[in-house]
Length: 71
Image 1 (tube, helix red, strand yellow):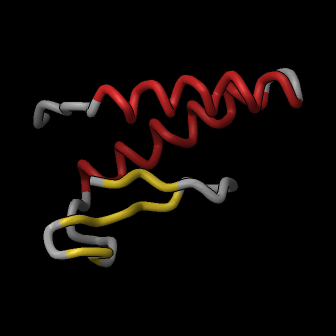
Image 2 (cartoon, rainbow, N blue to C red; image 1 turned 120 degrees about the vertical axis):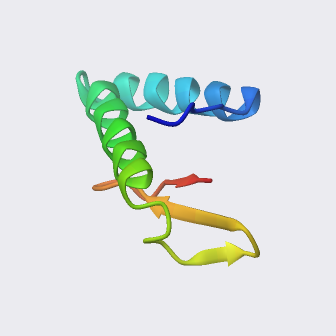
């Protein structure tokens, strides 16, 4: 499996989003985290499946959320 390198700002944003969602509804932060993990697994399996939003940059939408993983 390829090494995943996260931008520090992306990790902070992920943490803050999960914390915010958990505060809105208990368990929702965990649901978000699981959806992000699923999106990353899909990216690793099919890295060219999503449309480029800029040359060399793609975004995979996170299922059930308006967010996306940019890679």
